[in-house]
Image (cartoon, rainbow, N blue to C red; front, side):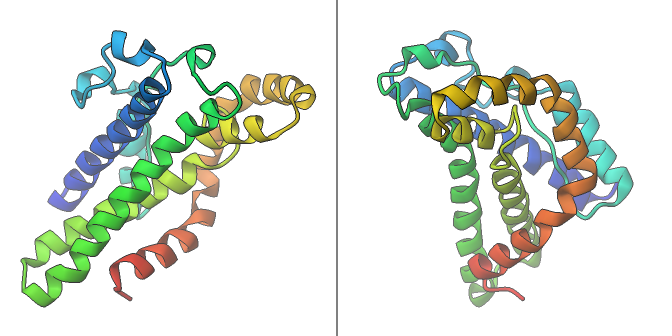
Length: 205
């Protein structure tokens, strides 16, 4: 396993932790202290690592030589009934994770734009590009409307309440299998969008 792959896995783990912590802080801001009392508002990786999403799946992508590394951390717990905004609170908490990944991608993308004119080391540029790509993948992947991904919570918030319970029960029963299927077979469909956004943010072709 070369250095670039090791750094990609490290970047992935840090990015998914920031993703989950962002959910927790959004819930805290809206009045729910569940994540705080669970000790999940921390970047300590031990608190967030999921055996499948944080270890096994990234290693499988490395062995597949897929060109990207995908994974997730343990979801940060929160109680939607504690949120002050009962209509849009769950949507706001769900959006916080992908938004954090988009912000990371933009920040490091702008660093890439300035790094080359300033003559910063090429290794710095490569690592920054990896941060951009991994966080764009995480953001877009998590916006897919299938439980337990964030996109499902956004979808359920927007749907009429009478339709949510039926759809949610079906999706949540098979959600993990669908997510694993997407991770292994459909991820290539999101790569064109990832590369396009990365080019726009970094200015690289």
